[in-house]
Image (cartoon, rainbow over all chains, first blue to last red; front, side, top):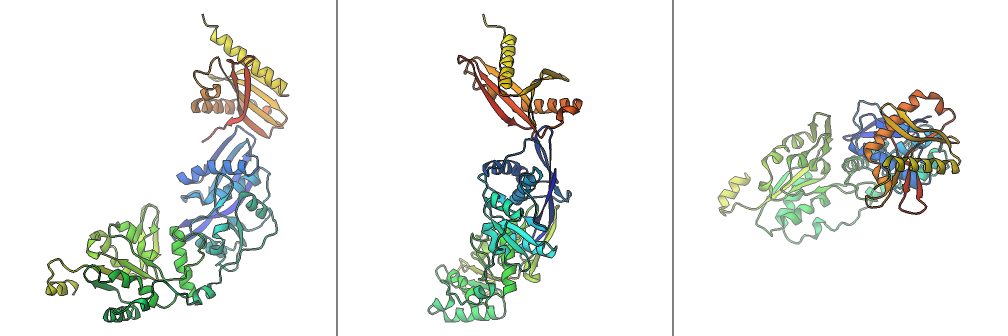
Length: 364
Length: 125
């Protein structure tokens, strides 16, 4: 028997439709996944098999073929575990696909738990765009998905729960965090510029730089307070708007750096990568490109401490994002654009020759 | 002087057939030659068709009997089963599940201990 469960696959910040088809026929037992799956998707077979058995379903002793359509797009990562398992259970007649227009994503644990995956916000936005009515997501990701209005978000903590929801069990759609309330609150931070005593001239400079969205280089001896001041730059930037906050959340979610339990990034990002960072780490890259630090700092501050110690190639890579506010990364498999509207704050020690004159020429 | 190893193997297969019959399986074929290989037992119970590999060991010195069914052997059995099913299309009538089982016989114990590992492996990919 054949069963279909719609799902979504991430490429960069966008997500596109993938249909998971499972066919189960009585023939010599085998479990194959086709449709250009990568290693993580191939491993999904073992997770799905074990999760089904440990959820007290019966793993069908028949020939199972799973297809991820469209078959010409490479499928990556563990987020197909849940739709594969659901399609398989439906095809084997152990569950029903009663919910029309419902997609599913999620990673499975061996015990049948549904684990959080990256990029759920982008997936939910894409599902809404293509007119799906409901989205089954890992319970830990439900807040993030529920930021998208007009889509019923059904959180599942286990494979059994997910199967029941797909079979039409009544469920309350997850409620998203109240973005307006979260952003409007003037939450006290532990890094506020008003904490700084003295340093009047530097504070004035920081205010001017932030007001004009200028990039900034601080030169001073160790212990002068460069890092301490840089950390407090986001505290005098205007609060994120709701749309900006969703943009930032999307990048962080796709990169998998959203802390557990956080559905929405409400503070401007402050990223301070170590000076040994590679060019790819800073601007993004990889076989299928992933966002780098410059995109994780989108709408916030990218702080480069020990500025002259950074690799030349990494710093040169910042030219285009600083100019355009976005970065386009082209690789064999894909060419993707990530947002990168940042305020660059750099800090360095003065030249060891201690010549004031030299320092002035250096910093121009 | 060791007893004839072929005779030992055939005795193990007879024991496995006897065991399956006791478990209400109907024996479809024994020592079925397919191409260059051989399937030990093909048995049917209800909607289940099982291809059974029999492994017996006189001693435990080389490990458990089922450990002798290697990944390569599993692939071979899966291939033979697919060939056999191709030439016996009616064997699948009324079948919902097809299984690859192992019957492991430990002949060190008296009487020999028979263990039936259902769905011990699949055709994989």
